[in-house]
Picture 1 (tube, rainbow, N blue to C red):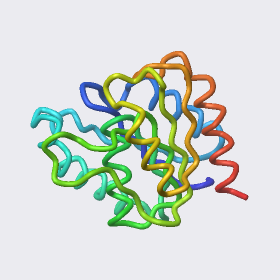
Picture 2 (tube, rainbow, N blue to C red; picture 1 turned 180 degrees about the vertical axis):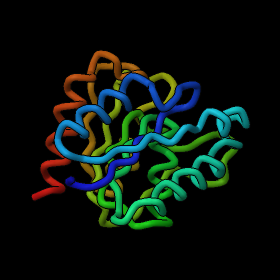
Picture 3 (tube, rainbow, N blue to C red; picture 1 turned 30 degrees about the horizontal axis):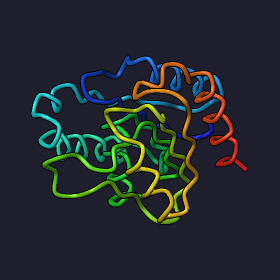
Picture 4 (spheres, rainbow, N blue to C red; picture 1 turned 135 degrees about the vertical axis):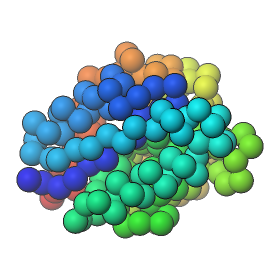
Length: 173
């Protein structure tokens, strides 16, 4: 086994969402162990209200594994993955359609320094406008792929899987 990956779905979604399911299956085919926390009950609290319960659920998942995991998240899942990395050691962050802030929440998006990270976003994302994450990535000098796609990144799944494979290979090297 190569390690542990925790995949966090977005709001109005679930642990069997398309992207996290495809990425989990792909990672498992490479020998990684995966888990996908279910945040649906947390999401009933609204966007800002769901963040702290989601972080607590993710921290519990991190605490349940023996080695620092790779965190993968989409949208709200990306937001809480970054914030969780401030509280627990993680091996990497692979974040999709990341909001730079959640209206009504006390803290903007952030992540731990020195953690291998790849941000992936769509130019046509009208839910999490790309300008915020572009600015964040620029200030932190983080790798960012921006593609001609919308918030769901449905047209980019094959490229996301390819980048995820390269990201995991880089962690293993």
